[in-house]
Image (cartoon, rainbow, N blue to C red):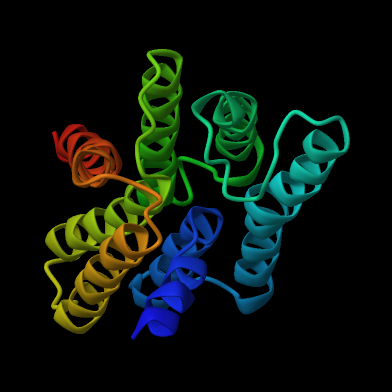
Length: 202
């Protein structure tokens, strides 16, 4: 069971969550999206949310600003979160068009608010769980999509809830976070998605 939970900690890594949200969106949206166009967007998002942060981590490690990939110390998370805010802004300005994909645009605006909130908490010396932030954000995004499209996405929602539970258990098993940090991560990741979609529907 321990190794299974550790696997979930890697599988549901926060770097993968924006790409997961985009992938789910393209798989469920009733809008017609050419495959080549969809793959181009997925590729661009994966570069800016996974490849660039990983390369930047190695840069930080080489100059001794981080000690491990887990970023256990609060101060080690400041620069990566600030970089994430910049990359999300870049995605919103260049990759995701608010006219073509308003739902995805709102999704990334929610991620931007989440990343900025996480950064503020870090500056206040509070280490929220970024794993919970990522999974809860995607979960609430899918719930919001189901309401907007008036569609049944219970299978996806159920799988994400399971993923959320296993992720929380894995973080506790690894002693990476306290229960408080997990709960704060849950709300920091999820609430902005609901708020942004509320304003989108107005």
